[in-house]
Length: 104
Image (cartoon, rainbow, N blue to C red; front, side, top):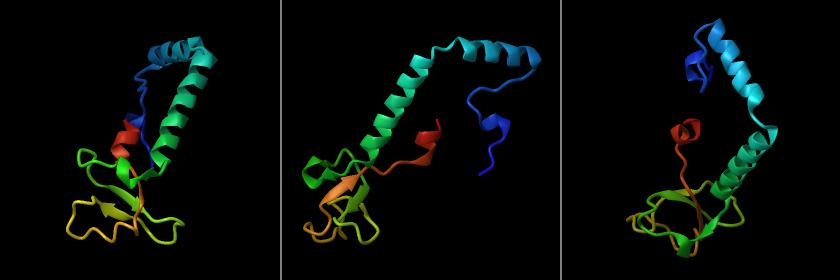
């Protein structure tokens, strides 16, 4: 996917805005940037952490269900669905993440 300038978080309209944006970026503490990256990495790692069946509840909704060792694609849905496979087959789940949640 090619990103155009309107997709960027910081939109720069003119040269004065560019200089102002550069000044703001230069004034950001590198430690704050690293702290933000660490927080983002931890959130991403948490999204990938498989959770056991007993941690799922209906308020969570559809998720990806896995069988370990992973040898096939996950089942997408909930244990409440009519087509829920054998509970001994899919024992762990991970959240179903929508790309728009990551971009925003």
